[in-house]
Length: 112
Length: 115
Image 1 (cartoon, rainbow over the protein chains, first blue to last red):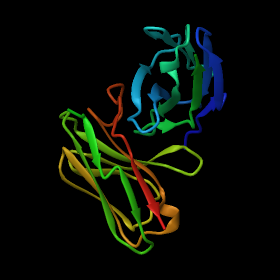
Image 2 (image 1 turned 45 degrees about the vertical axis):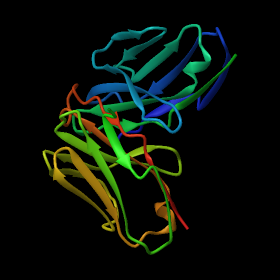
Image 3 (image 1 turned 30 degrees about the vertical axis):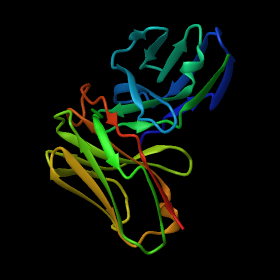
């Protein structure tokens, strides 16, 4: 069973601040890493799917990097806005297991 | 149109009752899932169906029985509900099981409270 860990557990920043958080996952038999954004009472929404070591993905002010050899991914938010407030989940898949294993998430609160 | 819809959104019921949560996806996906957000806030896979066939069945009590009448629907039946079944249950779907196409599309969750 995969063990996916995210840090910090929660984060409170001011509007305009840039921030980042970490997802750690087992690097052996790595297959894919997913990031999701989840607002309370709504559906978790897919942000990125990353597969290659060194991958960088960007969507607006949000970007992510991937290091499969050491087993971590960073999610960056540039110039945080209150609407970025959500829980950010990462999930890992290895080649021996055909579904995603999720971390607990990082809860981000952006104050105006 | 909501891509993955599940009903009911909120359900409060007594111990011992039998209840169902319904799920439908209109994305044309082959694979559907049930996830449970446990007390430690992890999203954990319960079941996965691919083209109406059970593919993954994690260590879930047999009081939980998924039923897939067609590949657009995956319903979750729970018999003899226990207090510990209180959780948020998420239905989800993906184009295929495994592989990089496995972006999962989630429903909004069903909040089950057993009293």
